[in-house]
Length: 548
Image (cartoon, rainbow, N blue to C red):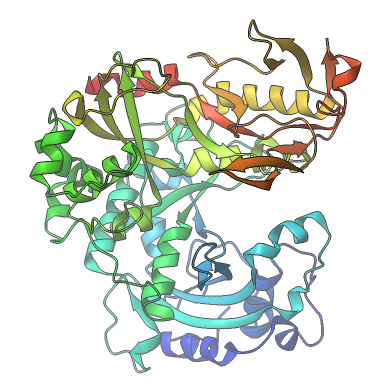
């Protein structure tokens, strides 16, 4: 069916006319089902553009060569500075990957390039992210008809010639970003061509991901030249990549200072991948002591600075990023949503387990399905840059803490890593399901006292190991098994009341063992010390041992 929107200009002009309108104003006759998850996209596509829903391999407007995408933006408030900014509400899901059709194709022949090289990106304002919990719990009802179209931009990965509309609503993907997107596509293609699409995950790539497309987790699809079926996936731009486009192109530079780049010269990307370039920045410093690094990089260390702060300053110095910032960040790290993680060795092994996610609410946790859980989503899409330091300092005399002599701390190396999908779908899933069931049905807690008469509470959670990978452990320095309360404390000689809020409500009463009647008020059935998900240090050692 031929569309009236048969040129880029006509599509884009119509998109710009929607800006400022609510979805309810566009769909005045309420022809679209507001309860449908796809309601915003359906209103724009089917009502505003009078375009039927389809799933063709062609772009939505084939004569114009333009694909239509409708996506939310949310408002986020910085907890410290209280500054507000707009962020991408979610990743930008593109076309579904057909593993059989995509097999053996070049980037220019791929369905990704054919369908998405020119995207009409319509963004509607959805919500303040602080309201998300109230909305998901049903405490706050969200009226989707009030969602307002905020921006319409033509997102182009190819040079726009003879385009007759103002260029200020055109986002041309930079040459550098396009090189990284191509590298990502090639990584995905590598897995498809070698019949290993079942091993794909978002954490493998930087800007362009292969996100899961099925919500049940039981839906699998065929590959070429193998009987192993793979999860259905779609190409997608990561939400942090879209964030940077919003901040830099759509609403102007929203950062307090211009964000720095690690890759200054795009020709570097023609010879090496982004990961290889970033790691190559670190290799000249392998084997150097912390004291040498501080001197070499001209770092000024204050007396009160923690080891974590010093290591962060070293990493920023190596990457040639401002040493005054609170965290290590650059354009590439931001867009690829890379998490930098320092791994400190003691006696040749990681000294700590690897915390990756706190649990804000046990009540919410037990209502998650594995496929839509925060743990699955995080580990499936997260890429880590592991930076390994070896600390041979000895313990201080008459103390439980270690010395921090920079002469005895050595930088070992750096590597990119993501949790393989086989580990996520195997041991991580098994442990997650087991532990969530325990919390749902009543965790077992045992009251004990050590030889110093100090109370210790044991639980029946799985202990950390190489085989199990994942485990639960406390996310608070002070244990608490009752609801929040004020405690009288003396700090710097002054008496004051301190709020103790280290526990979270349990969905089912705990099953206590050996708890004295006199302790029921302090160790209740309904509260437990807040917990976090951790990867075992034994598992982390296996990931970094090639650097040692």
